[in-house]
Length: 119
Image 1: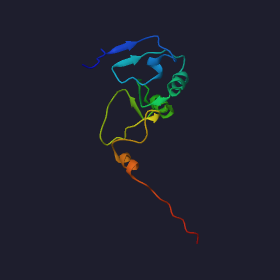
Image 2: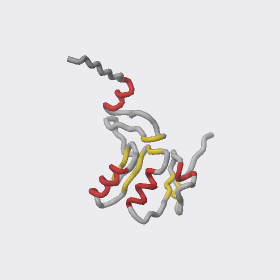
Image 3: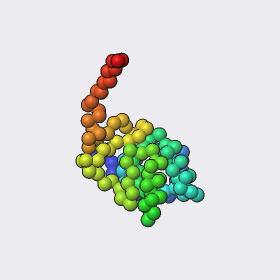
Image 4: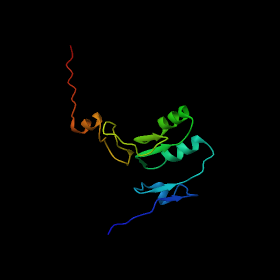
């Protein structure tokens, strides 16, 4: 028999807690309070992992700014876990190397070589 965790929301979490600092593959959401968007981005980027993140907001311009600052392989805006075989998927930092899906998957199987001959 396997383990099963009911969908769970953990509130008042903070950096240093295992549930915050490690990747949890399950229906678990940790909630932290921040004084500014900059503080939230800093905390998100301070982890050793960077598989994916989600941004929920009515301000799409701000969401794109934050998404560009996050060190994560995938960032969903106003959605989560939307996958498509044409989209590259993979993490940053200790969340993996390379990409699955899309044209980017071929990079793992390609060895490029540059040969230079002076004129």
